[in-house]
Image (cartoon, rainbow, N blue to C red):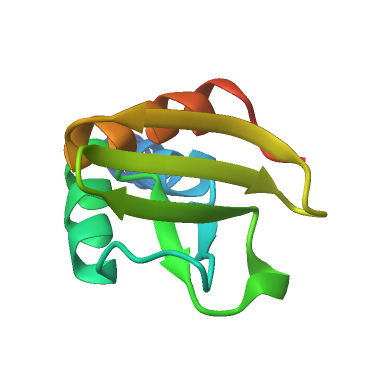
Length: 114
């Protein structure tokens, strides 16, 4: 009887330990791409997945935490990040797309969306 009770407790603790990290995870940050962006979405998504796995692109601006304007120009990339409501909160200009995405990711991870 004691071994059955002990087995049940171990099983419950194992299930609780497995379920806790899943429930403790934060919802991904949602980014809407500005219609003014001219950087291909596929390139943004690839770099976002590599640099910022806790962020995702959404197609509904009303469900987003941020809007990103990503503009490629002959000498590099200019990104402007807006929080919900339209306030500019971050801008970066880099020679490489991956660095622009990395900079935006660093910002959104250090400044929680409200």
